[in-house]
Structures are given as C-alpha cells and as structure tokens.
Length: 322
Length: 155
Image 1 (spheres, rainbow over the protein chains, first blue to last red):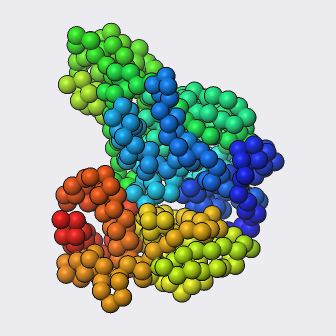
Image 2 (image 1 turned 90 degrees about the vertical axis):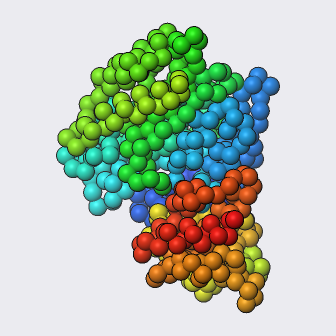
C-alpha cells in the first residue's frame, strides 16, 4: 500500500476543508482499504470521519427519520423504527455484505462505495472509471453481471449498494456539508462521458446524514428482493426495492428502484407511471416491468438480466399486493 | 508512524506502527498473535474475523490506527485459561473443521453472531445460522458440522 498521512477530523468543517484540498475520507474502510491494497485508490492523505458526531438515528418531529452518516449498516438495519416503518431498508441492508462487514461499514460509506466491475479493480487493465480515456474492456469482455440500463460506450459498470436501492425507492434525502440537501435519485450519476465520477458530489463535500421522509402507507408496505449467484454474501445480479399502497385493489402509491442493472440505483419511473391507478394484478405488474425494461440495452452476455429483472419485479409486487 | 493503544485479550498494548498497518497485520506480525488468519486479505473470506469492541469485524480491512483505544478479542482470548469457550468445545465435539484454517474466524464470528442474535431476540435455526455466518467461508466444506456446533451452543 502506498504511504499516506492519517489524521482524525475534529469537525465536519475541518474534514470538508481537508477534502477540498485533496484528502480522502475514511469511515468504516471496508471498501476504501481494500481499494488501497489493490492500488486502485492511492490517497496521499486520509481524513478519518468515523469519529465525527454523525452517529445517531433520530425520529424527526414531522415523522421522518434522520440517520447519521457514521451509523453502521448493522445498527441501521436493526433499528426498530426502520424495521417497522421502512422494512425495505432493513431488508436491503441485511441482504448486503456479511455480519462482520455490516458492523464496520457506515451508511455514508455505503453510498460512496465503488463498483465491483473486475476491470475497475484490476490496475493492470484499462478502465475509463479508474483511468479516464484508457478504454472499457468490459464491453467486449467479462460483463455478464454489468449494466443493462443507462450505460454509455465509456462504462458499463453497476453501482454495488443494496442500501442505496432502498433509499432511492423511499425518496431519501442526503445531507451534504457544503452542498445542502441532495435528493435520491440525484446523488449518483450515469456514466456518460465521465465514468470516473460516480456521484454529483465535489471534492470537500461530506455526507453528514440521510433523511427518510415520513413513512406513508407505501413505505410501511415495502420490501427488497435480491438475486445473487450464491445464497448469501454476494453482490446483486438484480435487485428490486418496492413500496406500494393499495385502495380497493387498485395501486394508489408506488415507488420502485432497481439494483445491479445500472451505474446508479435505478428509479423505475416508467414502471411506476404504468402502475399508478392500475389494478393490482400480475398483468399490470408484467406490463409495468415491460415499460421500464423497454429501454434496456443489454450487452452480449447479460441479456438474461432483462427477463430476470421483470420476473423479480413481478414476483415482489405480487407478494406485496397479496 | 503513529502511536496507538489497544487492549487485546485483556492485555494493554502500546504500539508504534506504520499507519498502513491493518489490525490483522498488527496482531500477526507485531504481536505474534497468529490465531486470526490471513485468507483473502480483501474482506471476502472471514478468516481474519475478531471481536472489535465486542462486535465481529474483518481485521484485514480495519486500519489499526483508526481503532486507537479499541478492545479486541482474538481466538487466543476466547478460552478462560484451560477451559475452552463453549463454541470451541462444540467445534471439537462436532468435528466442525478439516484443515482448521478458517476455524479461528468461524469461532470469533460465531461468538459475535450469538451475541447479535441474543440482542435481537432471534431464535437461531439452521437456515438462520447459515445466513448469519455467510461471511465465513470454509474451503473444506465443513459447513454442516459448523452449523451443528453453533446450533448446539445456541440452544
């Protein structure tokens, strides 16, 4: 690992100032330390933000929930309010990583983790995300688990987080020191011509908290379904977060996000539009999935994700509306 | 370089370390505590699992300098003198290993996992144990006996 200077941030303003001058934030380290070992990340200066006072989960007077950026994935997953009123978030967190990783990993770091595309993680290979302009071998190479929606000729990577998919379906807001409130979707960006930028944050922007809106009937009736290559402890091939409420057998409110299929946690707005006011039937669910996936541009070896996403979405909606 | 203090298996240590040192390398290389194993060194196998401030964690992904003041328990600290920890006794009883390389991580992870389940008030059946222990791989495939050993202690 390359040498670096280590310091503890005294406060958010100090951390942000260091970040603006090129320092890299360290929280749980479960992704960053790994990338430093691989030589993918080579910071000169680490600013440890894990000790900042962003470690509380507070119920807001308006009914929402404010989650400090330094809260561990494990603590958030098991928080009684999250389990009861935002089950999709608890389920997504528990579907990610392992028990020991969830104890270390923070929610701020979870949002900012990098893709697990094998070319990104291998410094001997070209990668436009790691080395802009070097090319994307994944397009013709190993891409069976990469993007089918919103990719560009420069990058076909997927965002690896489960938690972010649930937050996108819930319409969470990310509080950023130096920038203010950033809605989800809106934190992450599609690769376009600049796949080296995962998010819309600038150097020095520091995530301090995530805020969940007051739980409506859909949030309370929400769930996460993840398909992996093994039963547990693996990144998503496809995942679906859905929050639905019904009135007399008709879909009233409906929010859906997809994971494992794009450079961002993908809010399925077309599917949502097709479902609002529709009868809660398998026919409606299939039509909605079709509307969303009509935009899919699968690569040579990942076209299987199109029917897989449709089937997982239909199955999860059927279960939620039963 | 940085100076840090850690309490490891009940003993205080003051150490001068390179800030690049992971908790795993500190335990193994600086202190000779070779119980925690370096398997993948990338957080994918769980062989390095220790208890960090009472919670299971991958020592290979934790920079030691970031955990100044922490309390750590490794597999060397699980037994009470000559009395094996109940999980260690159950692993022997159920023949829950073959080569043994993953065992220290399995034991520390199981100890942390049992505490988590108790705090949540969850009853552990075999499926629940498998899910909660999925961060610890066993290349010998001793999983059936590992699950049986943990289930024995959980009940």
